[in-house]
Image 1 (cartoon, rainbow over the protein chains, first blue to last red):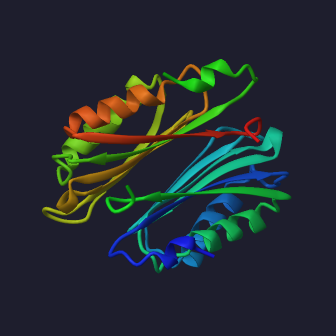
Image 2 (image 1 turned 90 degrees about the vertical axis):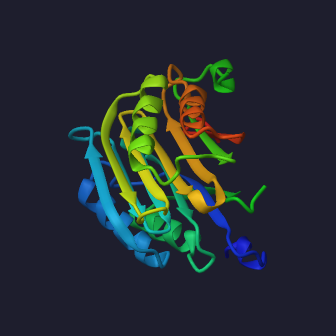
Image 3 (image 1 turned 180 degrees about the vertical axis):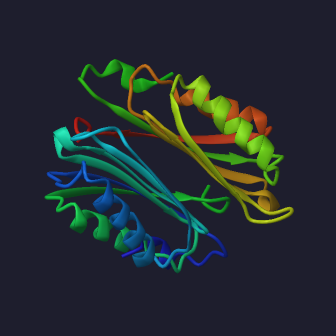
Length: 124
Length: 124
């Protein structure tokens, strides 16, 4: 799943950007919060802090989980059934795609578009 | 500066990922916090919340600013003079590169590598 697992360097970071289309529950801050927490768990990451903001009834939610291994964020536009997420994990033992799968499943996304970006001092 | 200004769609998001090399002050949580706040200001964004975590003396700092327009994050590795930042702004009036410039200047980065990723429901 994680292509960086094949690169044997002492450190690598994977920054996974995912656009979720045709998604539901994007105005539901409780579902978004559970999705973020379960995503961190699925990634094998340690949660330091979870912060969310709801822009109002029927409106979007912004949330970030600070991880010992970097972060997961989500920004939702319920009026477009669209959410932008990014998952940045800096341990090769962490599975960013598993985190993405959890969020996509919890918001019932019909289509997920992913981009993998290598990060870190060894990623030049 | 922002190439997305040339795309005439009702919504676009710019996700700017930047790797800062040869940087200083990366174990200084006060400088990192000021850098994040000033970066948000430079981007023309509205701050909802600022969260930071210091991993210990001489160690890295993780920080996220939740914005009305999405977020700015930073993760630092002082032992490698390296910081990873991402700036996600969803208004074409917001200047992600200006935010990046502010952070790079405050941590005296010698080299900045940037990647622009178009985000949003109109970015497929």
